[in-house]
Amino acid sequence: MIDFAAIIPETFDLQGLLRDWRQDSHQFLQHDLPKIVFVLLVSFFLIRLLRAITTRVGTLKVTDRYSDARARQVKTMAGVIGSVGKFAIFFVASLEILSQLGFNLGPLLASAGIAGLAIGFGAQTLVKDVINGFFILLENQYDIGDSIRIAGVRGNVEDMSLRRTVLRDDDGTVHIVPNSEIKLVSNMSRDWSQVLIRTTTAYTEPSDRITALLQQVGSTMAADSEYTSDFVVAPRVLGIDRVANGEADYLVVARTRPGRQFDVSRELRLRIKDAFEQNKIQTGPPGRVFVVETRD
Image: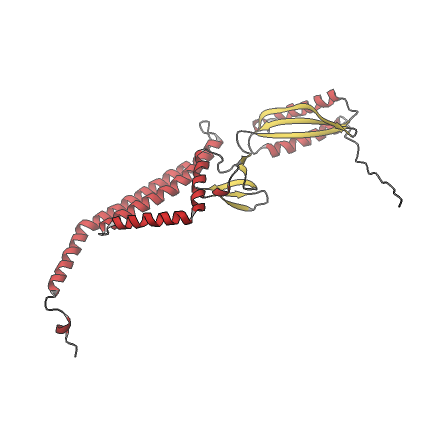
């Protein structure tokens, strides 16, 4: 038979231990638990408030007061601020709860600092991603919805954060580009886009007639109610760009709103073709094939 009296020391006071536990539990339930609950409620309220604000800002409509580019910029910043804000609230709440549970945060914070330093040396690429992403947002180099070329790929920006940028190109492929890989940004959606059309006619066609006809086509399209809002600067004929091989190239240029240059370009080419057909304008001669006979 086991002799519990021999195992348990004579100085062990079970009743005193139970009394201390009861007092500690009463102290925790009366003083510490309400503080923890209060911290959780405040954190939950702040997260809900932050989410409501970022959601409201993210659904900002384009009005007379806010331009389209400004709305995309605010939406991008709202997403980044929401992510960083949630992490900050969670981190501070965790420290407060650990403090109420009696943990000594001094060694914990010191260990976290040392671990953070070690992780920083081991994750230099991640640090570069975050730093480069911060300056991209700060300098407003591009926004969600912009058509850009970065790191050798081109597409529309679907999402962006401090670490990476998500692009979708014309065939639907999604490209995830770390921000540290972005050395040069080419933004095709900033302020305005340009349409450049070279029209080829026969060398014998009168230059004044071709220039007047192209200018008339461009002015008519700019006055069309369906396309008036797409133009920043109406189409204009710059003149003859090239003369060679029995043909002449005329250069037509126009400025459009960002993203509308492709539709405008296709419609302008169609109208030029119809105008040439109606006015019997001759195009350049067909290509020539030379066959040379050689002897051994």
